[in-house]
Each structure stands twice: as structure tokens, then as C-alpha cells.
Image 1 (cartoon, one colour):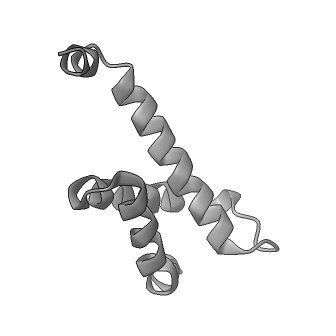
Image 2 (spheres, helix red, strand yellow):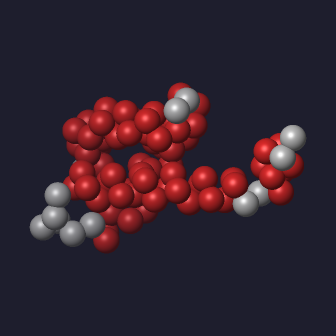
Image 3 (cartoon, rainbow, N blue to C red):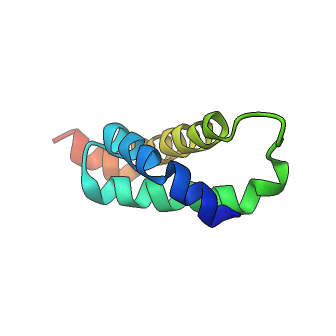
Length: 82
């Protein structure tokens, strides 16, 4: 089942990851993290709703949470203040 979703939505999801991250390496990580969360939470997906908006929400929230964690890091703050 997950493979079918990856086949159908993978390219669009990866495009979103690239737009959000602006580089291939971070986009690859976000793409993988998003699919891992899909696998983890697929039992919470409501089949009466469209899959793509749910997938997009997972991706965007994963991106935001990652950015918040990095931006609050003391290491990040050290580099950004130079």
C-alpha cells in the first residue's frame, strides 16, 4: 500500500521538499522523514479524505519542526551571529 502512494505521489512530494529546503541534501532528508512518518501514522489516515493533502501537511509540519529545532540550537545561534 505505501509503495502505491510513493509511486503516485513521490515526485510531487519530492518537488515540495526541494522548494521548502532549497537544496538537494536537505530535501532528500525531508522526503525520507515524511515517508517514515506516513508509515508510522498510516493507521490515523482517514480514507474518506484525499491522501495528498494529508501527505503535504505531514511534509510541511516536518519541515517546520526541523527548522524550529535547528534555529533553537546553540550551535546554529553561534554561526548565525557571526
